[in-house]
Length: 253
Picture (cartoon, rainbow, N blue to C red):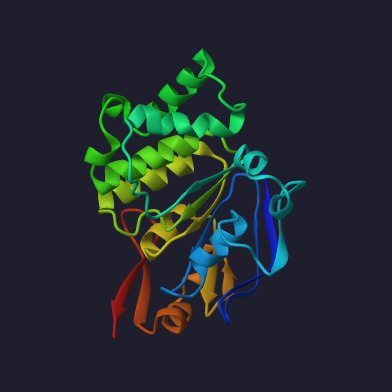
């Protein structure tokens, strides 16, 4: 499934946060958004999955007009993993992941054997089968994020948005989450802070600066010393990592 967002404008209060941003994610592509804090990455994604309402622009998943379609119908095709997932009430891990089946059910429809099988598969993909009876509130931040990913996988989306899902996680959980998503082989649009992760996992990148697309292309085309300095105001040298064969970075002020 292909995502096309064109001419997105988002204003919060009297400030224009996102200004005429357009992105395209082809079927099966893992596309990243990079840029400094406050540049508009997360706000742009919220406009795509309708947590915020854009003032202008269109969003399509193939032929589906996302901004003019009901939440339930959009959720049958589009899954979202966000950054913060605290809850004021508690559920077991299994109950949390079962919530991912909600878009595919009628009101008050009981869980079926198919739903249980889909949830077990999502738990297995995220290495959470041994956690299924644990309290969600008792988990660490990284474990909670894996539960949210499992819940999103249980939606069986054809496209996934990652809204800065790894910012507060240690390196192990970052790798687990991004590797799991990459393995789904569906279209992904992800806001990422870690440039090493962006270089390793993304097929294509959009660099965002002050609410606009500053550069776009493959990681090798975008993650240059000049672009990184323009975005983050730091000196940077790029080099090929001898272990991963991917881009790596050395920073300085």
